[in-house]
Image (cartoon, rainbow over all chains, first blue to last red):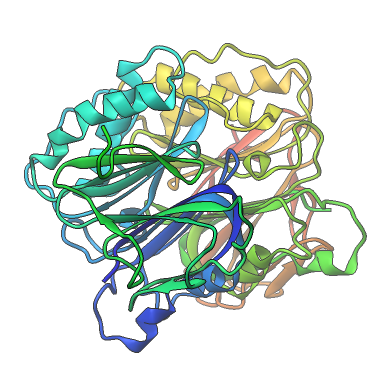
Length: 257
Length: 257
């Protein structure tokens, strides 16, 4: 059961994502799905509140060879908020001339921060509220355009706030870095040449990395559960944040600060 | 040659949009296209910097029965800004807990307003810059969440500013109203029961309104050029703004204030 999937590669990578695993299963995760692909500064954002089993958007995603270096995907099981398009993850906002993308797995109870800045929820989920608060606090904390290190430092201070209200496994990206935060269930894997199996999958979602073949290719994956057996998937400690840039883990992770 | 197309219906309407007209033509408008569909507060946003002739996203749009009350579509011929995903119209931002969508046809010379607010361009087009400035000024002009009338009043003051710098045919929507502004080439049409031909088209873009059949159906269309002959398409006067809500013209237009 994969609810979150993040990918960060060192070069725009032809990757095929697929939600077809869902076709064989019952009514779980029928509450929508979404996927966002960065292409340099640009963003493709596909969401649907229909099940990926029947959605034409899921069919497009399956047939589309994505040429992207950062991807965030989400399959939704509604806990808070109605089943509606505006409640489908991932969510997108703009800050400092970059699109920011956010997806969350979990349930936050009573996280009602004051939103006095430029970011307001469109839907009615705890997740979008937490995202708007993160954007507001990032904007407040930095006068100019901060570096990945500065952003990571601020996020490390901010993330425990929503996390204190429940389960806060999340993925966040500005197209430069991929930030992942786990409280209960999140794993990451770094793949380098020579690569293992081209196709990684669980019952919900699969990724085809067949195009990754050269010695310089590098890719990092973050997922709710390991997508392969026999590879070095590393579980997140509760409250751990990992930061990925160019397919490499640059902060967090086993044995790192 | 249709570069802008807007639709506003009184009820979420099954409409099929298509860019297939392009398939028969040469290399004009090869610089991308985009379409945004409001579904209540939610938004579907499909863009591509490939020509609609080859884009899988255009194929999805063609096959997808859109259930929407406000649509903004754009076919791009690059005048300013590189051919890149981040320069593809329509652009999206969030303000007051609503998504705002903007598409522009034309070229603005030397419109370099100071952007000191919460809206910054991600790409490098004059269009996105004008959109960010409009969002910034709307946010500044209203303390609470304004009505369509208040927004229209503010927009009527703001739109001449970018328009003074060149051609500024544009469509803007927050999912409640559709604002259209023409300086050189924009037409609108209101359709009511009994309806004319189900399929409206020029050589670039077609819309299939076959589902519109009942006496209460109403739909307004705004386009660069009339999509049908023999219907009452009304040209915009230079600098005219028209506002559509629920398939009706509520401000601007021939003989209106």
